[in-house]
Image (cartoon, one colour):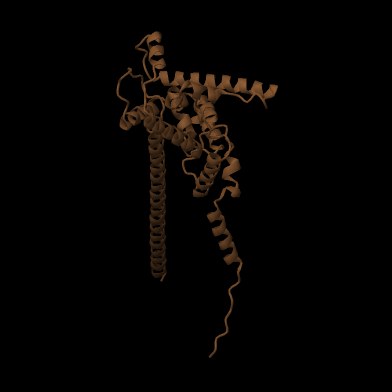
Length: 320
């Protein structure tokens, strides 16, 4: 009897051990499955992050390649670099020297691009400086992905400035971009046109006004020199200073049609500068966040939507 009881107990113990072993195997399989799922999820997330970074990098290089930034020294008369050549140079600079890349091209980047350099800015002061500048400019409205509303408001502001005020007068545009003005318009002006451009109305001019006019002219001269220095840095000095001055003084003769085409091109450049948020002294917030710059058609559409949204639907009685 004792032997039978012992065998029964042994059988129970064997069953329990088998059950425990089975449960343990199932738990282990579950843990392994969970671990594999976690690894797969992390890998997928990492791939998404890598794809996002790659896309961000592509946009940055595309933006830089399309800019007027410095890429390499060139001899005078040498063909301009192609878009592909500029992009290749920019990519090599980005891979080899990020601070130098930002030093050259940060002014062409947008707030969306700043995140790409986030990790490096924490350990490199120069990178942090340039990224901070990108963010600072973004607060003035320099963004790659401007909303449709913002674009429409800026366009409306542009139309108002074109028809009223002095913002797009020759004098004001020369103040904002003196070198481009001289290259495309000023050098082809007659002496009378130049005198008229610089003429001041002394009948209403105060001392403070005269002082401000003097300061403005000095700033225009200084800015033009800076722009010239930046432009000349793109080329190696192959001619003497006297030869360069002689070439600069001899403006080629152009027809009235060519003058008109040059002026139209200059005006379009200035319009584009305004619309893209590059006029550094303009208060873009006064436009971007101002519903007064919504077009009449847009305002009427918004009012119609508000009206219909506010209406309660009528319940019509039906006749059986």
